[in-house]
Image (cartoon, rainbow, N blue to C red):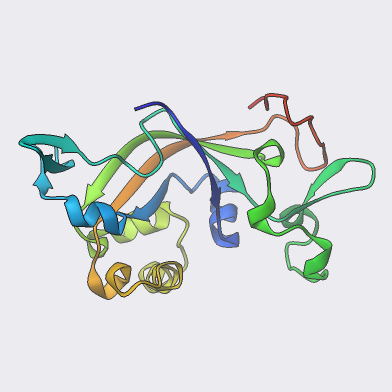
Amino acid sequence: MERQKAPLALSDDALQALEEKRLSLTIRAMTLKNHAIWSREDDEGWPIYEDDGEWFRVDPPYGPVGSYLWVREQYRVTDSGEVEYRRDLDPDKTSPNNSWSPIVTMPEKYARYRLKITGYDFRKGVQEITTEEMKAMGFGGLTPRKTFLAYWNMRYRSKLLRWQSNPAVWIARFTVQRRKNKKKESAPPSNTDIQY
């Protein structure tokens, strides 16, 4: 399986945790397709399935170790070609939303954070996640479990993937790489590699 790269949108709380170096995990539900084929775990606790008499490991969601996620956030490109980030200039979100580009539109070339996957943990159910793990995913405060539960049910609307259904999940561990230039950033040409 080849290394991959994929976008990841983070909540404001998770972005703050990332900047404060408190974010080291992210979580994703096992897909319904993989739920359907998953039979059991191997000796290392990895989910496996049988196909024509042979056993195979279920692929993790973000690609193998060494793959990376680039972090999307609200941004805009000025008339002079500089990239600005809402989190830096408008953390309280007092400016109109339409003056910022939506998170989902951010291309990789404007991302200032990259998360390099260093490993995965598999859990048979999301309810096995510990409070410490929730904190490492950016859910802090006095009630990280309650905050995480609300986030989970907002993100996963399918009844089969909701908290109450206790779906199997992947926890991805990562290291954070930050783009060398900060805040106002001249937009690089689309064919330029970003230096982290």
